[in-house]
Image (tube, rainbow over all chains, first blue to last red; front, side, top):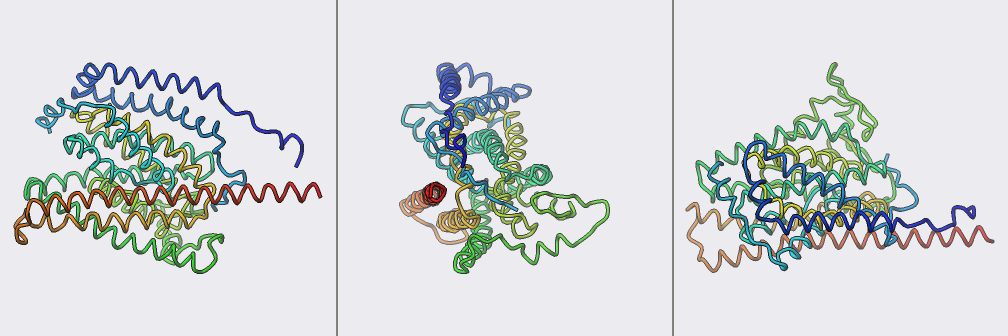
Length: 85
Length: 362
């Protein structure tokens, strides 16, 4: 194994903190404006796009944060890729 | 549905204990879903209902957390080369049709026999499907374990070899997970059945994943990862349908999502450390335990319909609580097996890494 491969991988702390802060902001907005959000999101018709768009936005931001969170903790996929075929 | 939408405006109040509870159940559900491709929903819906959330709002909110969770899980597992997007999309579209048909049957049963009739139908479907498929999956995993070939490549079943050998011109599609061309005339009914089950018991993957493994011939890891694509397609369509009637409580959906996105990433990572038959072990164990949970409720609904004698209110409450506790236990045990297998896999990899480094220095 070369010296380059032995070098510990840099952990994505910066991006984790950034996505974590955006994620917290999203959840804070949701919980602090519950009445307004519920009022609009529970309306029928085209308002149906609001919960769908919200779910996509939360999943990308919070999903990115959780992915980096485990990486920063050192919990990553096995180095040898599983042969699935 | 419109009246229900009106009542859905009265969403529950969220306190800290509720937030923590939903986050934790979401985490465990996500962990299992990331690993076996489905699961979690059968606990999340009753968990929300136990907080006083109306049944349809619980189903709608669960679905609205399911599709973004499945999306993130599928993207993660695609990085490991485990997802067959084409198979997932084709099965997902036919599953969507199955969901619509399944929901229609549910409504007809509810109109004819009321809530108790609908609940009995759901519970009996749970028991029959989980008994047949769950025991079959568990026995197959046990056979692999006993044979000592747990590391060996999974064998394609005789049925799958036959399905792959049938050539129906104009319907053949190549799927990378199967490394074969099969007719979509086989995938359509499987997707439809997955969707119907999803509309009935909320966990289509209990049929979808075994069908991909035993009927189409996909490896367990690819089947469970591809199920996430199916769950995304079904969940997106279902959420939009419920949202059109104003039934989604976005707060509940996003709080559960907060926990489940931690879980699904961990479950997906876990699949890279374990032997493929562990997917079958976790799925089979959960299915067989949940079977008992739902089985306990069958006499309650039969009594409500007057098919058997009356059951006292205390006994009904006891059976309901026991049923819910067993469901939570099933999910927790599934999560424990995933974490334990992952821990052992990580340790084995670390040991091998150290051994290789020592050998190289020598």
